Length: 267
Image (cartoon, rainbow, N blue to C red; front, side, top):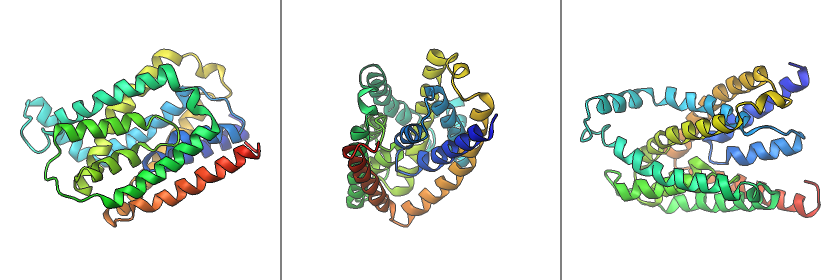
């Protein structure tokens, strides 16, 4: 592993760790990094980095996950944690449908800079809307879980943040911010596992042919895990402090800058 590759893996790991959990789109940032660093990375690199951040969310919510698994083991779907199981299933269904449709038909289209820039601006608008949510719902119900799953599916578009859209959707549906935060990330677990499985089945041999080897991927993943844990703690603080919407200004600034750069043919 050369120093140049080490630095590139470090940069991509930091970007993934920060942007996966903060509501500013990890996929959009990674695509921009690939372009500015002149990299051609297989999708497996992106998904393995997601595996690192998945490890973070499992560690962060380990107590909740253990209680959910215990409820599943005893087929207890009426307890507070057992209720999460059918809700996660319902929320995952639209995510799968929209994600597969994007993967088959739209992935190349939304890789263009202008599309990514527009998506960042839309993401900022959604984050700003989160301020208008009224916390009324005591429990998450199936139709709310489905709509949050739709938001998660749409966020496959680079520039649209998964955490940003799902948490915003939950807040707009009147769900209390602590439950919105928790459900958003519990819902991310099957989505990330599914993305990893799909990419492994399609591109297992591609990584060996790229300029990055397994050592670089492993290093980038560890970096993403460390940075991701800190980012997740920061995100919760912004949600608890009712400052979640402030990330909108970053998304708008980045989106407008990308549009200007695209028009001037800088990118």
